Image (cartoon, rainbow, N blue to C red):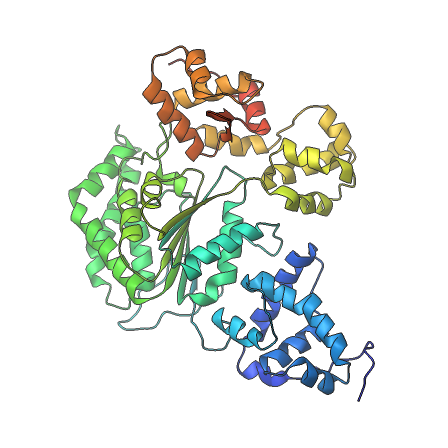
Length: 508
């Protein structure tokens, strides 16, 4: 029997029995996102025919049986699957299906089969205390996580992160990079892809620099199924902080000093709370995202130094990275914590990923903004080092001020616009020696080595300069170029422009 592959109406009830065992709506949504990534088009959607193929495969029907059910040619269906659905599944799972029989098991591993996993999406982490032994509720709101319905590139980065977290069971993972490079967006996209593998998922924004006591109370309240009455000592620390914040307007004291003295009263309380949280992470498979870790670091010093009263955050990272548990803490930061730098060299349970240029995927940003001069795309992307936020900002300027002409825009030199605000926040964190080093690099036409930098600054401070260079690397503000006999350092064009036009050279 032969059939012609021709346009046809797909009955909505075809292979509908898949609904009884599979989370189809979530799978449709995730495969649609995968199709958009594969085709590099945000307009693409999973078609009714593709959904029908998918339901058939999930019901363990092969191409021959699907062809008979749909009155179509089997060869046409095999072509449709190999060019379409199989590729979207490969993007979604980062595994290439070799045969249709592999599809159900691959998707089951990723949690799309009903009742295969539970999840808790807790957005604000401010909820009422649970009764003893009460289960954690399922939630669907994301709170402060960003919308990733439009997401560009980063397929290699996503693959690495998924490998570390799902296959290698890394306990502590950091996404690092300068402002605007897409750390939070990548963390949100990753979480959307792997959330089915976790029983509990929590997202916390650290931009307001909460005390660790506040963070621990919120986490333990969300994760623990034990009575919460023994958290009263931990709550006292957070309440004392509110008291000090009110009193600071009346007293001539430093708020940082008051916070430090508060935490110094009972350091064992924090230690016990960390241990209790680790116990929760051992009992449940949880994914915790802490977004904006740099907020707990102090400003005006080399990176990795915590604000007074926040040093316990470093101990928290060490405990999460060193102690055995089945969960993962994922953090985003403009600055690399020294605890991660130390721990990741010892084992694979602690990993870090530094985000660089968006590369060719940045072309989609320019196209979506309506810029038509494709021959100028590469120069514009290179000028802003493939930084997604910078490109989104300048494309608006190009449309508003230059009639959409990239060439006319570039003739006027590098323009930062509102991206200066992002750089300003990051430069505010630098020490005077770091700023002086950056100014020296900005004056150089080519990448420069350590010896030239030392001679330009004209100070016998070799060890301090080396520490400052390492700090700038951890802040993602400089890049390295490997020469034959030494490592050279170079600035991105946007950072050089900001330095020369805005940042004053400090007196040391």
